Length: 204
Image (cartoon, rainbow, N blue to C red):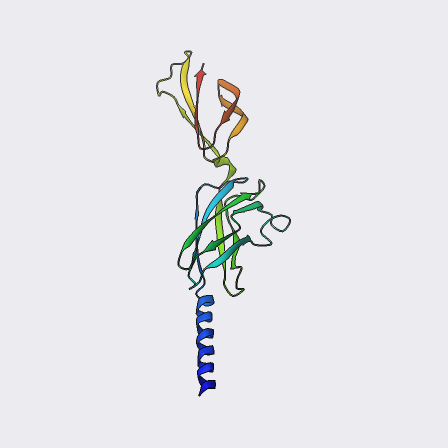
């Protein structure tokens, strides 16, 4: 009778332990910038919920083959923090910054995986993909011109040219060329990330 009770107690402990380890992790992520270009540095907000019945220390790492020399589309992945204590049933956030290569081929979708695991048990782990569609570099800075419909030949026409930087990155000493059949203008400009720059121009 004593042996049966002891065996029953051992089975209860095993079942409880199995439930704690098997509940696992729930991982979600959000990209802070929807426009991604060759050379962009993109921040992902990663949220991890501990669905286990116990507190755990969770570590997050990039896929071993996600950066150079194994990857041809990612230069660097930064994760902050790399590990954090998460109580049972609670969430914690990680910042993951991916620096895409300058020579990455645009108009394609690229995916890299994060390896998320418990430091207390090898059975509790998750693989979470981070995906970006790389836009053409020609869309980094877009231009619009504002000129009146009534243009009188032989008279000066004043108009504005608007430049919009579509990425969160500053550009300095860009060569600006504005040309038409009878007009040419060249100058250097600098523009801040996600900013709009307007230049006055004259058409003769």
